[in-house]
Each structure stands twice: as structure tokens, then as C-alpha cells.
Image (cartoon, rainbow, N blue to C red; front, side, top):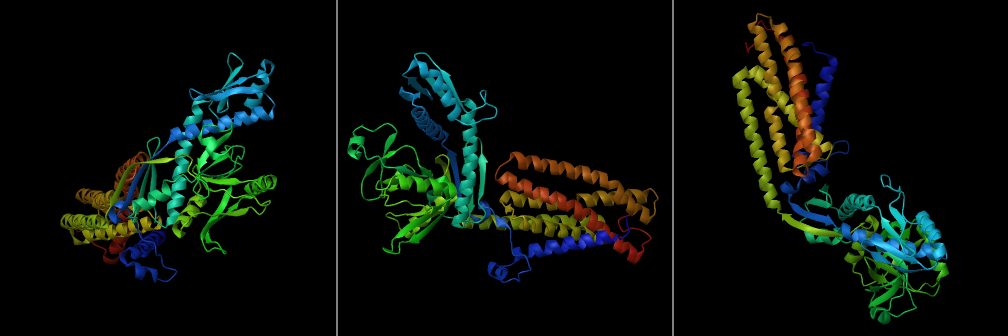
Length: 534
């Protein structure tokens, strides 16, 4: 094993160069880093919230609002299905978390039941009926339409996952660097935005549902009549912010939804110079928007954002281009924020702020200094121990392996853009402190072989070969522990586990391979008769 294999030498040299190149940007000021040649890496470590300062927000997903919305949509689906099938009905409404409807004609109860089973709901694996909606006949010509219990659980879980992705897109468009967004428990989301010192700015963009729909205005009744309680079936009264009317009566069914948008940009109106938001639909949205506008020329349609009408223009002609614009009392900032929300997509359910914190940059700087001091003290202790126990040669070789190990850890974290947190620094210090364990095992095995009367080359070979099993056992156990922490932990625990995992891999490489190459080179040059650690 003490032969200088060419592949081992090349691997050690490349690993050292890699670590040095990708660690270098962390040692340079940002302005110097930006001026580096294009072929050199420029990515530095991402500092977490506790090191850089920033905003911490804890949201909960309002799954009850999601349940209410689904029941409302199901009501409209039932109404439309029965109307299209020309089945007379009455008393359609919500009863105990389900829908109840009475079929007027006793002879059409089965027809209504079959029509609803074919149209409403969607397939749902795991549900007893195979669909997320059940339709059952009750007494007195009534049908009960209810969501399967699994449907709401699936909706809630899906809503949390969708919310995380939408929040990430919204924050990314704000320019905040590498936000940490993770799920906590069943329906909570933790957001850590390092470097973002204004949590109110985050909340204004994150918390708005931004669910946009295009609904036809119902002119059969005035807003005053609707406010008095005379709202037609299938319609609703919504407040308006367009500056022309305080409220409008609109059809509940959305003709076009915001999910069909593919782009939204803040612009200025060429005629008035006021800020506007231009939007563009996908193919399906463009066709539906064209059909609706061509069939309703001369009527108003409402652009609804989070149950508030922001514009209610009159359709002057068929709009077939698949694009349009939203006008209103916008400022440049509010128009840009609305465009960001529409591009990122609507949240599937409202979010509620459960906790909010701001971490100052000064606190983070103190943590970085404390971590650096801890690392220096720990490294100094390791250096003193190794030199005292194994002399300048073998102790120095271990220290060189430790330097390569540190370069590789920082380099790999920079490449993967891992976020370094205060627990991550603890993991880094722990890794460097125990990195020489493998060298201790190797050196002690060499001593045992020398005491048993073996020669130098045999003792050195035995030190590496016989200690390898113990080294691998210890580090595999270490790696499994880190994997468990990463899998079941959250936030800072994940940062600690990630740093520890990288450290385990680089430690085995540096403590074994780097040490072996350096000692083999020393043996070839000096041909010693005895070992300095005997």
C-alpha cells in the first residue's frame, strides 16, 4: 500500500486544486470576486439567517378555507350538471359539510344520481369509491353529495406543497438570495430569508393569495338589491376597488382563471402614462377568453383578485389575441408586485402568520466571529496534540491532510450552494476536530506492528490496511447518523447534518489517501531504518 500509485497522486492533486479554487471566493471581498476571470469560480458560501441576519416567518395554511372553497365549487358543479341534464331540482345547499339536493321529479332521481357520478369529482386512488366525491340517495327524493374523507387530506397536503413552491417563486423574483423554505408539521411553512431585513415587504408578497379569475357581471340585479339580500342563484356580491362602483354582482363560475396565465408584466399606459399590468394567456386560456368575449359583446366582465374586483370593463369586441391589460389605481410598485404575484401563481389556500422575527446583521456578524474563533482554537488544539503525540513528521502529515480536508469541505459547500448556519459551523468544527481519528488509528497500528518486531515497510502497510476496517465502520455509522438527522430534522438541524455528511466523506479521503501519499513519498525519498513514532 505504500507504493505511489499514479491514480492516487492525480486524485489527491486534483482534489486539492478543486478545494483551493472553490474556497478562494470565500476569502475575497465581493467587488474583487466579481472581477475574477470567467474561468474561475465565483460562488461563495451562503450564510444562513443566524449568520447574515434577515427575516423569519412562520405561516400556517388555512385548510378550512380550502375545504369551504371546494364545497362552493362543488355546489356550482352540481347546479350546472343538473341544469344541463334538464333535471328539475330544489333545496340545493350545504348540510353538515356535504351537499344536499332534492330532485323534484321522483322518476329522475336515478338519472340525476348517475349524471352527478359521471361529472362531478375526480379519480382519487385510495378512496373507497375510487373518486373524491360520493353521490348517495337519501329519503324524500334527496341526493347527498360529499367529498371522500381522503379527498380533504390529499387537498391539504397538496396545498402545503404547492404553497411552498409558489412562495419560493415569489421570493426569488424579489431578488432575495437562497431563501430557506421548509414544511413544518402538517400544515405549517417556515420561511427564512437571509439578508431581507423588511419582513413586511415579504409578507405583502407572500401572504396575498393572488387568485385571479375572470367572471361575468350579472346585470339582472343591482348592487343595492344584492346588498339587501336579493342575490340571484349562482351569483355573488363582491366589493370593487376600480373607483367606479363600490361593488358588483358577478356570476360565481369563473370563465377564465389565473392558472391559464403564462406571463404578467408591469408597464405604463401609452396614452395616460399610468402604471398597468399586461397579461398573456396560454392556448387554452386564449381560446376560452376569445369565446367568452365574442359571446358577451357589450356586457361587463370582472377581473377578480382575491374576491375583490380590480377592474370591470365593458367588452367592446372579441379578444382573440390571448392578451390584455389590467388598469386601476396602481403605483409603479403595486403594479410590479401584482405582476410578480400573477407570474408566480395563486396560492391554493390563504396563509396565516403564526410567528415573525427579524435577525439583525450585527448579531450574525458576532456569530461568525465566535464561530471563527472556535474553529481556530479547535484546530490549534488538534495541531498541538498530533505533534506532541506523533512528532513533527507524522503529526505534520496529519495537519496537511486536515488542511486539504478543510479546503474540500468549503469547496463542496460553495459548489452546492449549501447554506452555512451556526449549527453548520458547529458541524464543521466537530468534523475538523475528529478528522484526525483515522490518523490516530493508523499510527497506533504502526506502533503495534513495530513493537511486534515487524520492519518499517511492513508496519506502515499494516497501519493502513488493518486500520481501514475500523475507519470505515466508524465513518459509515457517522454518515448514517447524519442522514437520519437530515431526513427527520428541520432548519438548523439539516444544516448541521449536511455539513457533517460532507465532512465524513472528505475526512476519509484526506485522512487515508492524502496521508498515504505523503508518507509513501517520504519513505521513497529517505528509506528510513525506523519510524519516528516507534
